[in-house]
Image (cartoon, rainbow, N blue to C red; front, side):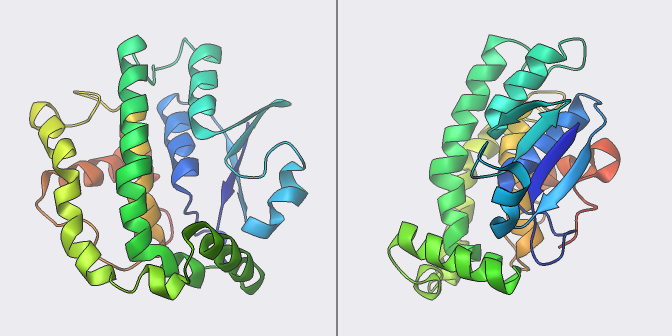
Length: 226
């Protein structure tokens, strides 16, 4: 299998939250894969017109895009391997966490680390990133993160639903992780890889959960360059 992911100027700095969902899912399924870190502006040259974004999984010529679609593909194709969902309930849980991450967690993180992402890119990718993100947010990157310190102070309160869930088990999936865990892990790994800012507070149950996730699968998450 080939997995195309997103990287900064340093190919070892792989930071896409969506790519990390797939890295963890492939590891969960105990599937061997080769990772191809790809810069923003190199994506069209690597995956052609199949997808404007990564991750893209190429499984012997069968290409799949979008992290959730890749997880569903892995679950259906490799049903004999450890399950990412453990049934319909796990898929529903994952969709809930996906919405929470995309609408609450990641926008808050962008107001903290948005400029740090730019700073880890090669010059040609910095230009692309600045133009596309400033168009998306309707402001400069500098304005986006102008109040990052107050955003950081407010961030822990946004994690209360996750603290509640972790009262009942070490992972969102219960005794062991599921795709729902990897969705949220991807967001925090994104911040960890691109920014030195202390997003999570040591001793907090969410921080403890994240540390457990970093150690999964021989520490594949912890080994990522930051």
